[in-house]
Amino acid sequence: MSDVFDLACDLIARPSVTPDDAGCQELVARRLRGAGFGCEHLRFGEVDNLWATHGTGDPVLVLLGHTDVVPPGPPEAWASDPFRPEVRGEMLHGRGAADMKGSVAAFVVALERFVAQHPDHAGTIALLLTSDEEGDAIDGVRRVARVLHERGQRIDWCITGEPSSTAVLGDLLRVGRRGSLSATLEVRGVQGHVAYPDKARNPVHAALPALAELVARRWDDGFESFPPTSLQVSNASAGTGAGNVIPGRMQVLFNLRYNPHWTAEKLEAEVEAMFERHGLDFELSWHRSGEPFFTPEGPLRAAAREVLATFAGAMPEESTGGGTSDARFIAPLGAQCIEIGPVNASIHKIDEHVRVADLEALSDLYLALIERLLP
Image 1 (cartoon, rainbow, N blue to C red):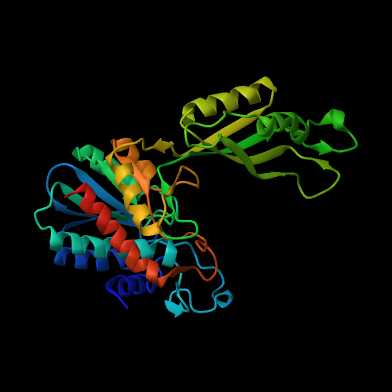
Image 2: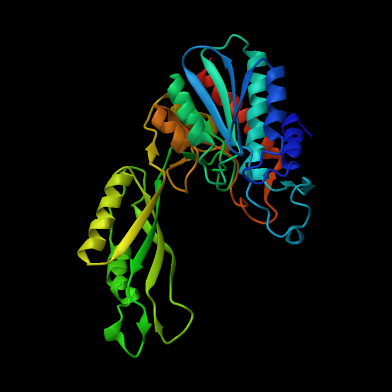
């Protein structure tokens, strides 16, 4: 097949269910050291991170990826072993094929080719990998970004290899991501018998008007290419399991996906003030997954648009949709961030796959983009 295909298969064969790296980063580091890269392994807790660099000075271009994968689910539901790469038709199947071991393999081969063809290239080219993207995302890029900040490490541009394409490789360029803010609401009441409501206080009854206002609110009308901020309740529970007991507590989980109109701090204050207006006896805990980021027009976005148009045969859609990515931890360092990767139709699914031809094309795409940015 090709170097990219072979490396993708080697990575897929390693059962690196988050946060276990299963030796993927050492495999990559061996190859990059052979190409002249300096490689630093940064392990925090159970998480492995790799920081590999070539060249010196500015500008600094970082390729960002992850070696961990989500659990495969029941192996018997797959047409083949999820950790035994298998080609069926035009597709390479296996957990991580699209998200994102295919991109990691394409990164590595593009880097090898780039430094072989341009040993005295301008600036610095770097690869940052973590095994904590699909998990808690605490000891991965979030932690490494803190280390880089403390070292004074400059990053000008970052290309994340998340599977962003929709129908064909290169048809979408992600130029930002929404922020993600999760909450756990505990509403306290007084447990009692349903026949004697005067002797109890039902937290469900108290919470429903507040929750109705919460889910009906229109937070904003969007921001440039960002959609409007949205809120979704993901879980609500109360009760003892008995039909004749007024519960003493209700728990509600919800998440906000927000654009740059907001910060996490402002959203938290708005929501807490609303619950207070409704007179709830409540406790609210928050988890900030990451603030939104947006890359405006500039050299990175222009170069990516031109390269993707060549590979896809048409100008790419430029989007800020989707969930979150580790680029949210790199953007606060002052970097402009984009995301380019394979078709995402099968990610996290049974029989995850990537088109074999796209693997080689993806490596060529990354190489073309690197050459435009670091001539």
